Length: 317
Image 1: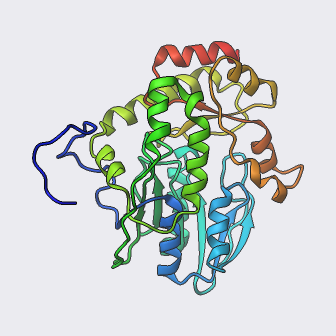
Image 2: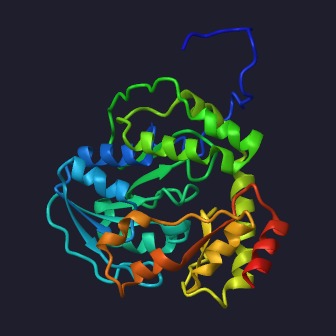
């Protein structure tokens, strides 16, 4: 883009700001793109990954014709068994809700550079040791794209620049008319992004991510998390690790009450489901199936304060 002075105003952004992940090897259009680049870089032949994971990760492996094998996790979200890796094999672990940093440190001692950490749910957790780590910006901020990749190897790849991004439609609708009005546009964009080729992060996302007060965002998320945990720990069937809290994604409440999600929705509290399209590979009596059916990921992000959290607690109790 040519250097320009004057003209009409665009969206305000902090021109001299920096990315939280300014030291990442690559800034890409998505976490899936980051994962694909990593797999090609490593010439992986097989990847072990949890049953409880987004199908987009599985589809990345399938598209590159890389073998994969699933493993189970317990109610601490830790692998029940660990494999012995052969040449060109890798172990992928998800930093669920951004709460698994201590467990990642344990796995890093075992697998070192053979560990791939999916930090799509853990934007604020920096890579541990020589692990291969990738991130998604869209799960934490209002941006149309954005992924980061850290790897211990040097990466000399020139990424194509994306064209004009139409995703501003759902982002602006959220501001003007509320979340419900732009939801269909959001879903359509998510599907489109999954089909997108590997590209660099868009200029729009670059600009937005340089202007974020990351210290405030992390602090607000942690404050909201601690408040929910204090009031709901007696209901939660998950054993959560909170000593290494680092700007978590949500407060994951596992509770055997299918009506709770509907009650929250009726009060305009929107709860995602992770991940409805993976049911086909889960055993009916498995912990993963329990997570799929009963997990309530409560919103704790930077848009909300103590009063919002108390409202959620009141509805649940």
